[in-house]
Length: 561
Image 1 (cartoon, helix red, strand yellow):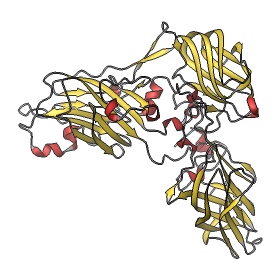
Image 2 (cartoon, helix red, strand yellow):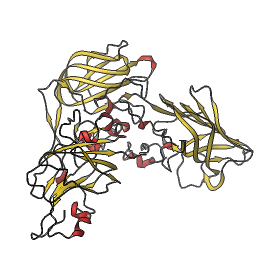
Image 3 (tube, helix red, strand yellow):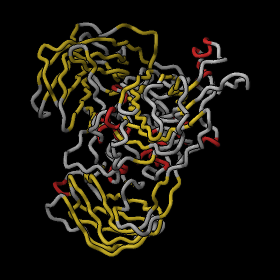
Image 4 (cartoon, one colour):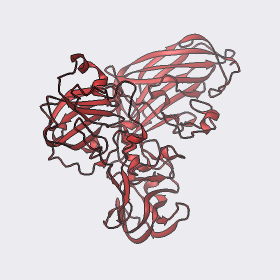
């Protein structure tokens, strides 16, 4: 904050520090003694370029206090862990988020003639990143995208990659064919690229015989670079898209980009764009999900909201998440809701699944544990107001996924709006840190905790809301709402009115709200707009030498970027 001499009238600032790695100021100022050009400088309204929130003294994380008196769902917004998850979206976090679904989730498979592509690799050539890639070996090969529980309409596909080949085996002729299907058996040829020579353009680059080998040793196989667009003769809506690749002498095909379009608009094939609040196992064998209630708790009922249930299994408890005690059997049957009366005591509750229905994967939407115990988040107090500034860090900030909010920004920013089921937000801070700080997700910096957090849950817009008091006499001359930074974009509302928009990562914003702020209670609401293309997960792995792999993967085996 800029400092002025005592002879000059100090700016009166109401500081809004918050919403998704942001800091902001709302303040008023009298113009006497202040040069006009001062109002055009960022450091007049904010703390200045290069000065950001993050000092330990600016930690406004809520405190967590025990509650042993209220009978409730003590599993709500508690950290959960799974034995496996099908992808980075359908994870354990979603069984305690309070959102119950009965719909089959959308998910993606990628396969070749050699079998299924591993979870960590299946999104690489559709992630909008220029370096991650998928490779398939063989003279007659294919990539098959399976869109489970959804379809996409496309009219062209653009791809960029290469083919490495054995020049001693090469023969004239190649085929690159894109096909569509809705059952995986009957295929429609959408477009084809065929010729008597070789595809693409010759490259000076020599490739290794192993597409995953990464070393300083020179390669031996010549390559052809591919950068093509196939326009479909018969555009349609399909659940399966297959790219067939055929050339005698081909050792392997590698694609960095495989982008589908409809009317020149990029089709996002990443399943993280869908939010279905459910955990889905990666396997059909035994599996488990457990919830950390944080403290010793007592409970008398467990509710399981299934989409594809376990017909055999147990409810177990533990004090250390290592030694488990059986307290009830799963009832089986056809009902999607299991209400299991029991008598339990412990910190951890686990659903141990032994046999799925329909020979499919387990899909569980929500676990409710009815009892007493656990911790509740208590917001940190906002800094005391001064005659010149009201800083809105901490205080009454709440946050919620936009998909769970039906009201408009004008409605949310009115005192009459009740933010039911919104969580205590950490401001300044990110959405992720808010959920972490109330205990809804595990600390992502430890072990494989990041794998328990759903990417689809956070691939969303979010609403922030704060109620604050403005003392009588604070508003004089001009009053400004100032933001030190917001990520990525935001719509800003105050007392039932939209007052502006901020666009740009961590860009500063200032709004003249002289006519909007009133003595007493005021409400600010901020709609945080997500990135349009968030990309895909990259998971480090000690045993793989591809992107983010090799020995570098040993230090963070669950790295996401």
